[in-house]
Amino acid sequence: MTVRVPLPARGDAAYRVVIGAGALAGLPTLLRDDCPAAAYAVIADDTVAPLYGTPLIQRLAAAGMPARLYPFPAGEARKTRATWARLTDALLADGCGRDSAIVAVGGGVSGDLGGFIAATLHRGIPVVQVPTSTVAMLDAAVGGKTGVDTVAGKNLVGAFHPPRLVVADLDTLRTLPTPAFVAGLAEAVKHGAIADAAYFAYLARHATDILARDPAP
Ligand SMILES: NC(=O)c1ccc[n+]([C@@H]2O[C@H](COP(=O)([O-])OP(=O)(O)OC[C@H]3O[C@@H](n4cnc5c(N)ncnc54)[C@H](O)[C@@H]3O)[C@@H](O)[C@H]2O)c1
Image (cartoon, rainbow, N blue to C red; front, side):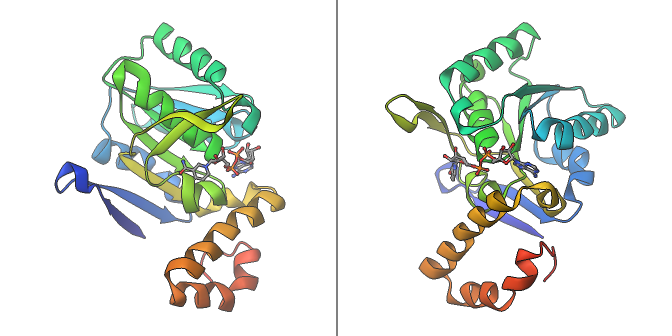
């Protein structure tokens, strides 16, 4: 399934949200079409990096697309300016230029951090969001809010930087720990309760299949 998200501030521009089991297999083609770049920097935490970051680098290499993995320690406590500084220093040391793009792979922390790196590096380079948690798929990866936490509070330093593309592979949810899987579903219930009665009813009708992580209830 593909959803087009319009960007009204930019005329008739829009980005695609591609959703499906196995969608990551098509990522090289999707990147070529929607976010061509000289090189791709994959930002992922150290839990998600071996699960989905390394396979993604291999898939891009096989397609002849230069890519490098930039892992950081998992957890909200690392969504900081210190992590941003370390990763941006590493990207610049590797010669990541204005013709590069960021691919943020993981939960909302990777998405917010990767997006903020993209918003600020060289005053802004493209970002592609590859959400792997329910929170990230249902909320964080879409809309363009990026940023990091400070001692004064969450998300207090950041920027609006919409993605060029979002690819949500439902198969990645199979490895998400159950507490995180269930916590993110609260977002879906909230969306239904606020804005879409039919969607809310669908969630109620298929609750058992959704909780069993059936990608096509
Ligand atoms: N930008 C936005 O609009 C927006 C919206 C909502 C939330 N957020 C942000 O999102 C963050 C929370 O997101 P989150 O709950 O995804 O946290 P998270 O990114 O820390 O992910 C939760 C944990 O699950 C692991 N994980 C993620 N995907 C996995 C997978 N497929 N398999 C195995 N492990 C996996 C991560 O390594 C991490 O340990 C917060 O920082 C919040 O501020 C941003």
